[in-house]
Amino acid sequence: MAITTEPAAPTTETPPTPESPPEPQAPAKEPQAPAKDGWQLNSPLVLTMVLLLVVLAQGPIRTALSAPVMQSWMTVFVAVVVQALPFLVLGVLLSAAIAVFVPATWFTRALPDNPVLAVPVAGMAGAILPGCECASVPVAGALVRRGVTPAAAIAFLLSAPAINPIVLTATAVAFPRNPEMVLARFVGSLLVACVMGWLWTRLGRTDWLKLPAHEPHAGETKGAAFWGSVRHDVMQAGGFLVLGAMSAATLKAVAPASWLRTAADNPVVAILALSILAVLLSICSEADAFVAASLTQFSLTAKLAFLVVGPMIDLKLFAMQAGTFGRGFALRFAPATFVLAIAGAVVTSAVLL
Amino acid sequence: MSRQAQAAVLFLIGTALLHAGLTNLYLRYVKAGLQPLLLLSGGVLIVAALATAWYEWRRARAEKAHAEAHAEPEGEGHGGHVHREPRISWLLLLPLFALILVAPPALGSYSAVRTGTAIQQPYGLSKLPDSNPLTIGLVDYATRAVYDHGHSLGTRQLKVTGFVALDKSGAPYLVRMALNCCAADAQPVKIALTGKIPPVLQPDTWLLVTGTYSAKQTKDPVNNRPIPYLQVTEAKPVPTPKDPYDESWNQ
Image (cartoon, rainbow over all chains, first blue to last red; front, side, top):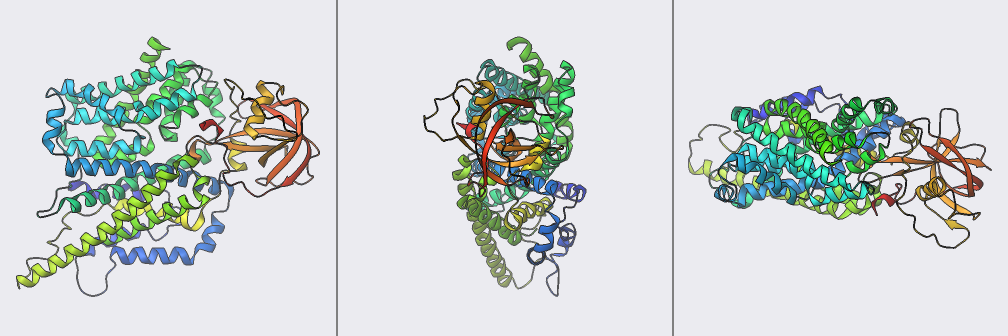
């Protein structure tokens, strides 16, 4: 309930793209909506005006966007959004179904009472959500709202995008000569997910979590609650997805690829460089193995770090986690995940690779 | 954003996804295999938009009936708007405009020149048909030229399709972006051109090049990976292929 003002901040921080001049002002007008008489700027009106303006000005907009760097930026931006939306919709449908149709008691019966045991069970359960990281964020949010201990939900959130069969198969295809990478990715990701869950049982505080309330209004039918949840999650997580896609596209279009070559020479720098690259690139976990395989000059350990860090924390995920769990949570969660994921990858590769 | 506006945005995004999925537009951004999921999610978004509009209409009607039954209105804004809707949703308009109005082209020479060639050592080469001339994928040619030293190619006439990219010194390359999932992970595979090259080459022009295997190789300045040459005998402009990316890595 209290969180709804927070997501407004990132909107103003994002670099204004030439195609959307009227938008930043639009939300500011919204609080006036309750006034019932006279002329007022409510959001359907603003939306209609924005749409009309953009359609009328499409000629100049196209000219402004015809520079190669802008075209490349837009292609990557649209690609990340188009690629992630189906998985986001899948996750949102699943999360709405959990929120509306699965009784809260089911989870308390399915998971062990002891949170220390519930964490690995939830982590393993991540293997059954076939999809990439965009699907797991709304599902984990629904789990917490359904009374699942946050520690278990965190283990699920972190493991699901990395250890499901689709992602592991892609990893096997990308590393035909190193089948041990598949095992290392599975073990490393599950390990980090469980450690993060256990860490939450020791240090986590529930007041860091600010879940936007979905409380059903009295007399609301199940259908209304289901579609209300779908609408809310697509609009909110989708907004954050767009934010993440913008930063990933900026990196891809602007940053030079040649600096990677120097980083590969030092083993420690190489691991750090690929971990940071995983965060910045925000590639879907179903495709990241192919990108890792193409970074031929790097060690297998560095590539494993890329594969373990990427599905757990990246720019797009950070934005979506901040939207689903609150900024206070995301700001603490992201650095801890990043450090632990690197450590987990290094330990796993020392044992398995 | 009010719920009516959200319903409109959901509907527009759903329609845009259906449009992209039903035309070949989606192939500029994602792999071909994603089409069924795209259409499905577009449909779900449209249903969500209609459901939102329907429940909003019913709620408004119920509130009106409620207000008429109790002649005394009990405070404005008492309805469902107790918590405000997320403002971040306005950002969803950006990909909508980008997809509907601009529809940016597939990645081209700009990205190709900035990124190193992504040629990979194959773990087995399939047998090529015996035809001459032989139509062969650009990635396949580059792989066979570098790692098979052209044994399976011989002296046959080869037909290769790709787009033109010019490096800083103006040397021409024929490039195909290889893709695993979406354009964010697309990487170029390059071959260098020698022989009868057209005098004027515009970057991003698609060419159908006929030529033979050349043992000459060069290094990509970006990542030091090998770039094989192709001895060109003829080059003619062709329209952009239906799927501009090479998806052979997905098989």
